[in-house]
Length: 295
Image (cartoon, one colour):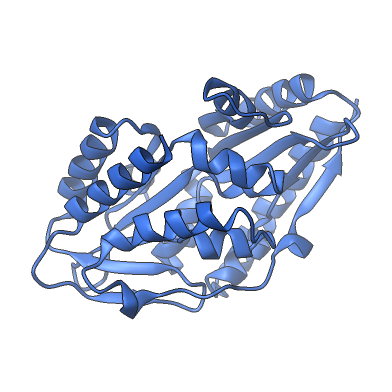
C-alpha cells in the first residue's frame, strides 16, 4: 500500500508540472515553488482530477480569489488544494499529534504579478522539522521522493531541516472530552459567522486503514474579509489559510486545543503591513478557543 501511495503521488506531481521550461525556487521558509505553463484554473482542475483518479481524497479546494470577489476584494488567482491519504500521515502523528495541524498535504496554485502560474508546497523534511520529528525516516524520505516529482531537477530545490516551531504553538487544556470539545469548536466558529471549510478526523481516518491514533481532529475555517488582506501582501500565505485549530487527546487522556495565531503566520511570510488585521485574527482565535475549553 505504501509503495502504491508513493508511486501514485509521484505520477500526480509529474503530470502537474510536465513542462519543457520551469522556474524552480525555494524561499527562506523552505517553500518550494515551480512555474507552470497552464493557468491557475486549468492546473487546479487537472491536478484535482489526477489526485482523485489515483485514489487520494481531496479534502478541500479553496478558491481564495473567488472568495475575495464575493466580499468585494481583489486577489490574483489563488487556489489551495488540501488532500491526502492517512497511511503516511498517521505514522507522523503517532510521533507527535501536533503535526496534524500541517496535515493533510497542501498545494498552493497561484498567479504572480507577472501573470505566471506557480505551484508551491512544503516537503516532508520541512513539515516534520517544524515539530522536531525525525522518525519514521522512511516515511519522510518517501514523501520527499514523491514531492520531488514536481521538478525535473529536484537537486536544485533540495530542502534542509528547519527549527522546530512548537514553542510558537498555542495550546489550551479543555475541561471537556475530545468529542465535546470538537463539537463546541464547530458550534462557536459557526456562531461567529466564519466559514467552516473542512473537518479532518485524523483518528478516524487512521482507523479506516488499520492504524491507531489517539483522538486527533482538525477544523479548517476562515473569513475571506481578513484572509484576503494577508494574501494581498503575500499570496504564499495562502498555503497556510484558511485558519486551522487542532483538538487532540494526549497520553494522559487530557484534551487540548492547539493552533498558530496570525502573528506567527504573518512573521513566517514577513508580512509587516497588516498589523490591524493580525491583531483582529489573534483576538478572534483567542476568544473562540477560550470559549471552547471552558463553560
